[in-house]
Structures are given as C-alpha cells and as structure tokens.
Length: 500
Ligand code: UN1
Image 1 (cartoon, rainbow, N blue to C red):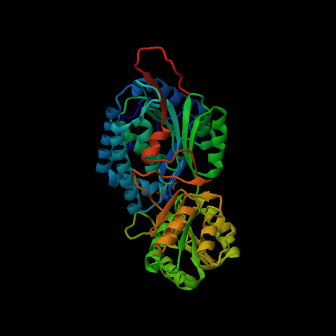
Image 2: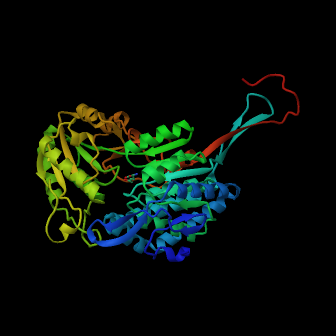
Image 3: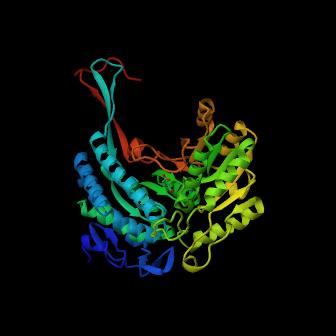
C-alpha cells in the first residue's frame, strides 16, 4: 500500500478510503492523456464499483461521531495546514492540472490561489459556526439555534475546476463536522489524487474524507442512492443535476446542484468599449470557454454594434492558442475528444445560424494535430433563439446578438433556461441598477467579465443553473448544517399561557 506522501508521485490513481490509499478492485480503468498532446499518457484511472462506494460510505459513517465531536476550531486548523501545503506545492500542482485538464499554467495557478483562499476563509469560519439568540413572547424564556452537521455527505465534481470546486465543497462540509465521500470527475483523477494527498497530509483523521474514482452512472449513482448519504452537492450538467435531484428527493436528501450557464454580456452605447471588448474576450475564451460562468452571448445595441464587433474581432484573432504549459499561451485545448467533437458540431450549427467572423474550425498542423484545439470563434447576427445562443457549448465560441435598445437587451439576456452570471458594460448608473434588478441570474458583474468569484462570497445561479443553497461564503455553511432550535424556560413554574 502506498503511503500518503508517496501517492502524488505514483503512476496509478488509488482510491482513498478510511485513511488508506487502496487500488480499485473493479479491474476497469479509463486512460487519461494530456489533451494538448495525446502522446503524453498520464496513466489509467479506475472506474470503481458500487461496492467500493459502499465501503467508503461505511468508513465515513464510522468516522462521523468522533469528527462531529471534535471542536470546530480544531477541524478548521486542518484546513489551514492544507492551505499551507498547497501554497508550497502550487507550481507542481499547477503543472499537473495543466497537463491533465489543458488550461494554461496561469489559469491553473489562479485556480490554486482561489482554492487556498477558500481553505483559509473556511478555516476561519470554523470559529464562527454561530446560531441566533431570540427573545421570547414569555417572561424568563428565550430561544436559540445551534448548527449541527448532517452526517455523511456525497460530493460529485467536474473536471473543469478539479481543485477549486471540490475544495469549496469539502472544506465547508468538514468544518461543519460532516464526513465526506467524494467522487471526482473521471477526466481529472490525477489532480484529484493530489488534492486528497494534500488534505491527508494536513492530518485529517481516517474516514473523514474518502475519495472514490469512477463514472457517474455507477459510482456516482451509488452515492446518490446510498441511504446513509444525507446530502449531495453536485457540480456538472443540468441533465445529470435533474436526475440527482429526482433520485435524492425519494430519500428526502438535501441537494445542492451547480449546473450550466449561457452567460450574457450586455454592452450599451455609453460603455467604455475598450474595457468591454477586452473583458469580454477574456471571459469568453479564457479557460477555453470551459467554465460554467464563461461569456457566451454578447448582447449589444445596434448603434454601437459594428464598432464593438470590430473591436472583439481584432482581439479574438490575436489570441494565442496552444499547449497551456507553454509561456504565452492564452487558450488551451478542449479537455477530451467528446468535448472537442461537441464544439465542432456547434461550429457547424453556428455557420447555419449566424455569420462566422473568425475561427469556426479546428486548428491543424504541427503540435495542433496532437491535441484538441479549436480556433477562437466569433459569430455575428445570431438570433436570440438560435441554438448557439441558447445551448451551452463549453468551448471557445462567442455569439453576438444585436438588439435595438436597453429593454430588449434585458429581455434577451433573461429569455433562456439558464441563469448563472450576467455582465453589463455601461456608465449609466440608472440603467446598471435597473439591469441588476431585472436580469434573471444568480451573479451580476458590473463593468467586469462574467467569470470568477471570491472565496467568501456566495456563488451560484437560478433556473436551470442552480438549485439549493448557494455555494461558498456563508451560504455554504447553511447547506452543510441543520439548524436545531432550542426553547429555554427558566421560570421554574408551570406555564400559565401557551406559546402559539
Ligand atoms: C468560476 O468561474 O468562478 O463549473 C468558477 C464551473 C463552476 C466554477 C466556476 N462551477 O465552471
């Protein structure tokens, strides 16, 4: 059996159950290769069985009473240690993330720094797991609330932020006193292994955090169905999110789903167009568009549309696409063949639905032939109800929708099943706040891109983008705790009046 300090160097991806690294017994694996260079093999990752999930849930169940009874500030200190280890090893972790997922090293480091912030913030929250004290309707009475953990929680996470998203679930779950079974994406097993290795080295007791690699249909499904798992936090597609919600409902499990987006940027005549164009290109093509908060729709008023589209085009054409490990690269590859093929299909749909201004095809020749590279693509004159304006592509594709005025811009921004993030670029305070009030989404950015979020601020969407409490910030603590209400009567006498 590998020890925890060896595992991040090992060639395989064992599961982590009850404080031990254990090789999966399923005999089934998925091969993981660098999406920028298919010749670069990371290694096989196991597709674990339902039985292996059950063992992990059992380990988490057994570890729960002692972890629940560990003082919260002590639980928090373990996260601080993990933050320190992650900071010391950030360059090695960033190289691995880029090699496995494809984002640029700068983006990988950004994700890691955000994760360190989340660990530090959540460690501090351990000292603030507060309730309320409330006066009573009766004399010599009062009421108060306390937060209690839920028990075993199941976490299912995606490949596009394989460090930050898992940690923004694991950290609050643990600080609140829950124990965890985590099923990471099968596309980023090596990065997940490193994340667990860091948390294990920080000193988490056996069974408190368990990780089982595997596919959603089997390992993920077992986690959703297992009766000992009391809450599920999922980040991924709407299709899978709604399946999880329906299944979990039958067992009255608490559910939090963070799903897709089709995030608009509205640009008005009075905007700083330089700022709007530069921010939009970054929000659309950064992370290769593989981000639930990526900008995928530009909604621009007719009066400035030609000028603004020209500015977007100049910036889009200049983007340097390539292997994210190479300095200067701004846009990496799609994560795998399936994602790449999906993007190519949408390019063809887009050519029928809009006017192609640049990109529109895979990149070929030299190193491009070894990876999943697509030229950053801009479509103009896209109708608001076109498929490329309504469906999440998760690739480097941006659609321009022209509208006549502000009111139409707000309508178009909201007229979609998704509701994660939206931006407005304008210098008119009245219209900025009218937009903020009316647009249907969870996060509004004013004069800044649709992407990103801070460690201590809630994050999440509405409609098909989000379900349950917001993640991160104070609302994460709400999700991972139950509130117990306590009534105290210190009269020492039988009640003469009732409370209603
Ligand atoms: C961000 O853009 O701030 O899957 C992070 C996703 C999100 C994380 C986005 N859950 O892209």
